[in-house]
Image (cartoon, rainbow, N blue to C red; front, side, top):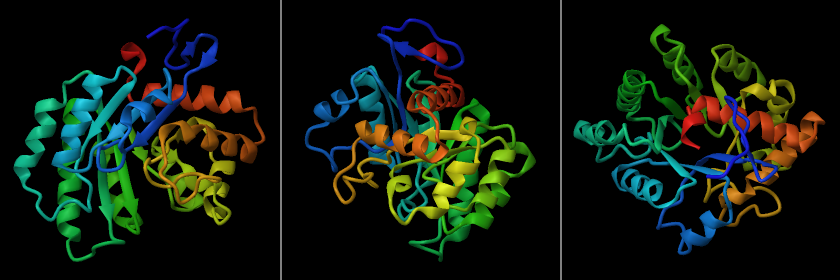
Length: 271
């Protein structure tokens, strides 16, 4: 991949700042034209996250096929009905693939299901332990599970891990608590929605050094594409909104968030 130079962070491609979509789901069930979707990002970086056995396998295939695609492997809290502890062996078997840069999407989701909270917490902790063992970043999903998510992640053994609160949706007070622990906040298309006042307050008041750009494609397409199938190239619209909210230049958003992602996912020597 052509580049002029890199630090623990900033990478410039042909004079332009590299952009990183740190979280998306580019799988066959959502897209019929993945080559086009990925090529739309040109030489910019895409991080694809798995959520079950099938999508974890697809992550590996995508990483092996496309030079600008990296991946994380994990079991989503809403994908545990047929989960078996042996499924975690797939993560262990593929964790040393140089294109696998983290564990995720993992976490807690009490919006869809609350009768399996203990199972969710147990699987979450087991995956955190795998990440800890292999010194990998973690991509965390947390929906209507704030207290349990925070109480687990603040445990002493997890405090030095590189953790991302994907699609951050809680308030500014909690954002301050999470960032005080050194965790990153993933900011996606929701920031462009008219009813995103709480998230806008977070973006306005939290230092840019704690923010990452993401799309969560195919979900949460930003305005003006809301309701349509999302794709990684729309990460630029997220960056534009962050720049507007923080009243800073768009290049500053790109530079700092790219630096954040490279450091968070140990990408410096992989690009």
